[in-house]
Structure formats: structure tokens, C-alpha cells
Image 1 (cartoon, rainbow, N blue to C red):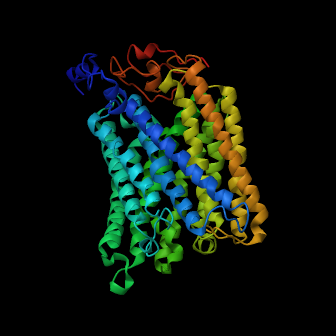
Image 2: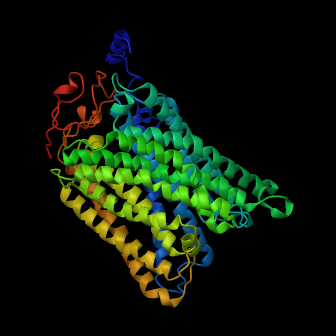
Image 3: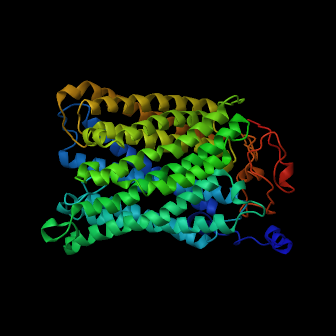
Length: 553
């Protein structure tokens, strides 16, 4: 990059867009990536809350073997909405739209994303999609599960039309966001920030963007063909007219297995930022973590059929997918070992954010181990339709994604709001969440191994005791989240001022005020090294090389 180009980039009087003046432009139709990130956080957070309410309704029904709290039809609708809301309308927008929007441009030293207006448009595809999905409750809700497999989904009413339209719409926004983020990472990094000097959360955001761009097209094809089959009776999935129901599963899982990594890879980035900050030492194996993220993304497109071992695929198909599904555990294991090596011998500060990361490491590892078990064809044949699979996916998505996200919330909350949360309330929140999470989902492994099928409203009374224990634990787990809301409210009202860098971190978002100004950086910094060299001078040009990295909290 030439000296003239660097000087143009560094000029303070060249913001990417002017500061908004009206309330509407500042908080509603905002093109500021930070406001868009907060908007994603609010809407996706509400969707996770609503998804959790559906989950609690399911657990109320399962407190007894023949409860009548929900009818079988309502029970089917409840677990359909729980999964749909949690995956597409909750967790994915939260980790990509919220964290990605707020944190990633700051970490690369940019004043905004590459296409601010497109970023605003991407968000505003999200609320209409939510309204479309929830409208189906008034016209006959979808009830074939979050996968909506035909022919069951095609036998339902108009609810499947709302479902396909809503998920297709939210996919449009996700694709545009991915395009925007990838362009931002490639073209708008601060001078000197090579790919091997980027923060690991930026690596995670870029890889996730590539996953979204490639995989969402398969989902769009699956949704479009399901819509056409229902509305216009096109025989894509009618075997009597030359169609096949397994085709939908192939298209759906070609997206939805990478979607698991769209959920978890940004969390890997969050964890990779938090651990070195509170361990006060350079992260072990920076390049190994970065390149293993790329390996996970590549392998994620090669393992989709392990979700289909019970669909009648021949051994010549299932055996390669079994081997590849086990192989994908290797790059994930590299990350676990790198994080553990970073913690080894460190002067660790057990803040709330760090506790949630330690909780993530334990619960996600358990989910990964059961995932390797289910990658074995004989094991999957026995456990695929049982609560063992429910336990596995929740250890990956709740114990992995949500535990990491909670760590990220406590970590970046001071940067977003300028105020600190209560560490006492936060630690109570962690321990109650960790205890009741394991009390809820660990017994599901056992009840599944004993043969209890998933997605059933009534069950054998022999499973009553374990189900009652699971349901009570689930209610207490939900109650633990009240501490998060109380902590957030207290912080906004009475929380102490955070200052620019309360944790003593070294990535660029901590080099500016909290909350960040509209233009982010008055001067775009030059970068000289990775941000994880604790004990070394900051790798940024003046004035950022003068910022203190001594923890103040």
C-alpha cells in the first residue's frame, strides 16, 4: 500500500458516511454497523427468549407420561417453532449479525462495513421474516419439526407456506450480510493488518461469511422446491410421479450441517479473544487456530449425509460420510488443545466472561465426543430417533454456542454500553446456568440410551422419573437467565464507567472510547504484529500505541 493511500485512509475528515441527525436515522434506519449490531442483538435475543418459552412448554408437557397441557398437534407445533426460532431467527443472527456487526469492523480498524446501506437493508429483511413466521400461528402452524421433511410437511396446511417464506427471507439477509462482511475483511483492514495479523474473531467472521454464501444457496433451493410442491403441486417429492423425499434431505443438510458451524465458528472466535485476555499470555498456536477454522469450513461441506444414515442410504454412501464425520473432529480438537495450552501456566483471572468460556470448553467437548459417537453408522441407527440425539445437539448448541455467546456478552458489554456489569451477579448467573444446563441435558443421554423416542408428547411411564427431573432442571435453567436481565438493567442504570479498556485487552476495539464514537477511529492505525503479544508493546501506530493495557477491573 502506497504512502499516499495510507494518508488518505488515516484522515479524520473522511468518514464513510455522515453522522445521523434524526432519531429515525440514528436508531431505526441506521447505517452505522454498531447500531445495526445492537438491532440484531435485540431482535435475535427476543427470538431466543420466545424459542425458550416453547421449550419450557414442551418440558411442562413431559413432566408426566400422559399430560394434557398440550395436545399432540400443539406439541408438534411447539418443537417445530422451538427449533426454527432458535436456529434461524435466534442463534445465527446473534452470532453473525450482532457480534459480527459490532465487533469485526472495529477489530480491523475500519470506520464501518464496506456497504453500510446494504447492511441496513440486510437487517430489515429480518423483522418481516419474523412476522411472517409468527403469522402462521393464526393460520395453522407448521408441525413437521424444524427440518420440515416431506411428505409430512406437505400434508400440513398453509403453515408450511409461511415457514418456507420466512426462512427464505431471513436467508436473503444472511447472504447479503456474508457478502458485506467478506468484502469488509478483504478490502478494509487497517494498513499493515495482514491475514496473519488479524484477530481470530475476524478470521472466524470471514470463514463464516464464506460458509453462508455457499451453503445458503442449497437451503434456498430446498425451500423453493418445497414451496412449489405445496402451492403448485410440483412433484419434486412425490415418488408416485418420479420424485423422491430423500432429495429434500440432501439439499437441506448440505446447508444445515455447515449451519452448525455458522453457529459455532464465530463462538470459536469469541473464545479465542477472551482466553488470552484473561490468561494474560499470547494465544498458543495462532496460525493453527486460524487454519483449523478454514479446515472445519471445508470439511463441513463433506459430511452432510451423516444426518441421513437412517434414511436408507446404501453402505457405499454411508461409510465415506462416517469417516469424514469423524475426521472433522481433528481441527476442532486442535482448537481445544490450543486453548488449553494457552490456559496452562497462566495467571488466569476468573471473570464472568472467563467462567462462561471454561463452561463452554467442558460442555462443548462433551457434545463433540457424543458427535463422534453418532458419526458411527451402527450407533446412529440405534440413537438417531432418541433423546440421546437431543442431548448431543444441545451440548453443542447450548453448551457450545450459547455458553460462548454469554461469555461474549459479558466481555463486550462494557465496550457497547460504556458500563460494567456486576461480577457478583454474573458469577451467580454462570454457576446456576452451568449446573442446571448439565442437570437438564446430561440425563437425556441416559433416557435416550434406554430407548425414549424424541418428538413424542406421550411416553412410557418407565421414563417418568428422569423426565420429571429434566423438566424441573429446565425450569430452573430458564430462571437463571433472570439474573442476566437484572444484571443488564443494573449496569445500564448504576454500573460503574468502564473506560476504554477495562480488561487490559490488546485488539483494536479496546483502543478507543466506550461506547465507540460514530466514526470509530479518528485516525486509522497502522498494524505491526498480531494483537496477542502480552508483555510486548502494542503493535499499533500513535496514538493507539500509548493506550494502557493494564486491567482496571
